[in-house]
Image (cartoon, rainbow, N blue to C red):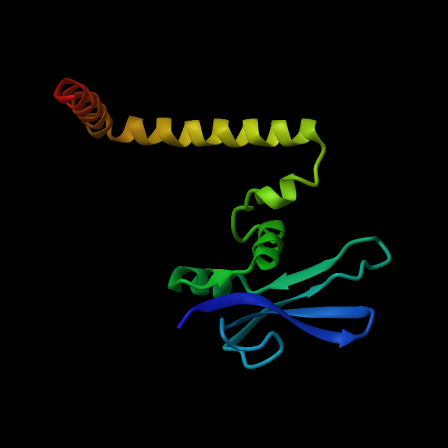
Length: 145
């Protein structure tokens, strides 16, 4: 059974209010759920803040068990600080100006290079051996032709 963390809508028309729930992926949006984890009120209060509440222990538990948060729930949990924020999807990047797209793509490439460098620092023998195998395999394939 695939378990998802998603929003369940409550409230009147034009006054939405959401619960953050854990539910079976096949269940309807406002249907049966396993556990209520928190709330999200998208209507700003007088000080222009939107209210997000979440039970951090239970969120961490469900993530450790393998529950998959929806895009919006992952964004909300990133705002609260319970999970690291997700990078923007490609479809969302298209709505930004070209200059900002370049900046975000460059930052993502730099982060990926840093992760690869950190992995290489942890296991220098593995990365060196893997590089030698790749070059040896390529040279052998060239000689056969």
